[in-house]
Image 1 (cartoon, rainbow, N blue to C red):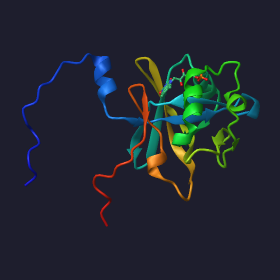
Image 2 (image 1 turned 60 degrees about the horizontal axis):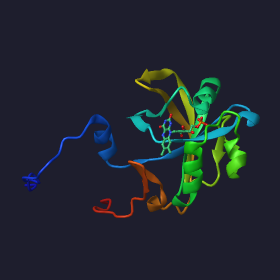
Image 3 (image 1 turned 90 degrees about the vertical axis):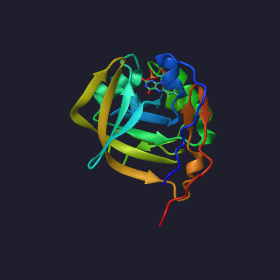
Image 4 (image 1 turned 45 degrees about the vertical axis):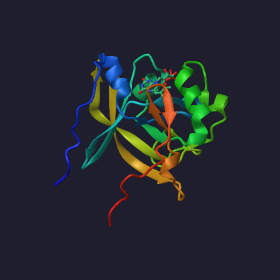
Amino acid sequence: MVASMAKEVERIDLDVFDAVAHLPPAPVFLVASGAEEKDWNVTTIGLFNVFSLFPVTIGIGVKTSRNIYKLLQETPDFSLNVPGLDMLEVVKFCGEKAGKGVNKIKETGLAVVRGKRIKSPIIKESLMYIECRKLKDKEFEVGDHTWFLAEPAHTEVNVDYDKSQALLYWDGEYRAATKIVAPKEG
Ligand SMILES: Cc1cc2nc3c(=O)[nH]c(=O)nc-3n(C[C@H](O)[C@H](O)[C@H](O)COP(=O)(O)O)c2cc1C
């Protein structure tokens, strides 16, 4: 029998925004898009979800005011790049600086190259990346964000990928997941 964890604790009410902010941390990504090299740009994105495993379907939530939204409208694909802890300053910059009229790839000095199976660039410094092909008819608005659903077209990961190096975001703080509490079985 699994012991019950329930015990008497004192709790406080949270408003809806605080409730979201208190949820455990989520990954943060650098999303790159653009069909032509001259248009390529990068934005920090935290709203991400795996919508299905069979077939693998992932989605990102983007506000219409973002430059990356315009690029996503014009481009059949994007790349989802996992930044390491050493990319914190780039992640902050790409999450603060609006890309309209600003080439954030040049400004940050990121090394990019066209994806193997997509027109958009991938970011070479990232720990891993997924080349994503947008799914037609799978773009929808929910409140203040538009969700773009996509299927992976190609993925590469560093051979020495260290999961503890992936950047997480929690209520204004950046974190790393460094402790394994139950190792994988088998
Ligand atoms: C940690 C973090 C997560 C973010 N997540 C999102 C997101 O999921 N969707 C979004 O539209 N903007 C998000 N933003 C805000 C954009 O990255 C920011 O407005 C950026 O300047 C937009 O750049 P762009 O205009 O070049 O697309 C996030 C910013 C930060 C710092």
